[in-house]
Image 1 (cartoon, helix red, strand yellow):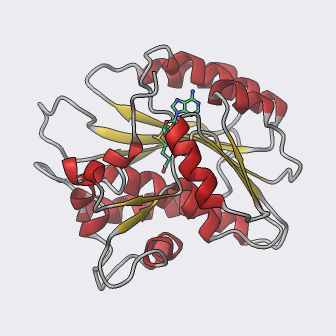
Image 2 (cartoon, helix red, strand yellow):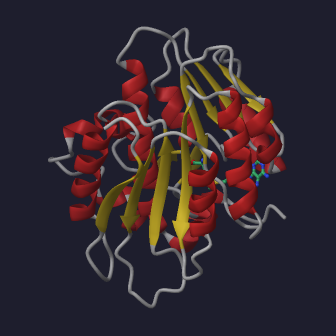
Length: 281
Ligand SMILES: C[S@@+](CC[C@H](N)C(=O)[O-])C[C@H]1O[C@@H](n2cnc3c(N)ncnc32)[C@H](O)[C@@H]1O
C-alpha cells in the first residue's frame, strides 16, 4: 500500500518522544568504546524539510520540536537529541532529523547503521542522504522479511529500531512475529518497537504477542500527546524496549516527564513508564 509518508508528521510530538528515547539509547551505546550497530528497519528519509508542502499541511512540528528547540532551559539529559536537531539547522528551525540522521549524528568511525526503507521515493532520498558514508548501508526490502534476514549484524552490540506505519491492520501481528523471530536470532540485541495508541486498541495484540514470544525484559514508555479526548487520531505514542540497557528507565522517565511539561495541546501531555516484564530488577 505504502501511502503513508512520514514527511507529514516530521517533528511532531510523537517524533519528539520516539527520537528522545532513541537518543538516550544511543548515549548508552556510546558510553563504551566498543563499536555498535543500529538497524533502522522502517527508516523513512534521512532529513525532513519543515517548509515542505507535506510538513506545512498539518504543521505537526509546531506541537513538537518547535516548542522546545529554542528554549533556554532544554533538559541537559537530552543534549544528544538537541544537538542532532541543532546540527542541521541555522538560526531558524527549517529541518528535522529522521531516525537515520539522529543515529548518524552520533556514529563514530567504527560504528555502523543499516537503514531500510521500502517506499521508492523515500528510498531514493535515503540513498542520496547516505552518500558515500562507509558506515551506512541502505536497503530497500520489506521490513518484515529484512528484520529477520539482517540480524545478527556483524557488530554484535546494538539496537534495532522498528518503527512501522501500521497502515495495514495485519501489521499489528506480523510486526510482533517478525520481532520475535529476529530476537531469537539475536537475543543480545536491544529492540525498540514503536506503536500508536489510537481509538482502536490494536496495539494491545502486538504487546501480547511480544510478551508471549520474547523471554526478555520489556520496558514500555508511553507518551500521551495531550490531545482532546475525542480526537479521532493518535492519542499516545509508545515504545516497547526489549532488553533495555541497565538503568535506562531512569533517564527515559526523567526525559518523558520533562517533555510532558512542555508539550500537550488541548490537555497537558503525560508520560508513563511500565515494566511489562523485568526478570532482573
Ligand atoms: C513511521 S515511518 C518511519 C519514520 C522514521 N523511522 C523516523 O523516525 O524518522 C515508517 C516508514 O516505513 C516505510 N514502510 C512502510 N511499510 C514498509 C515495509 N513493509 N518495509 C519497509 N518500509 C516500510 C514507510 O514508507 C515509512 O517511511
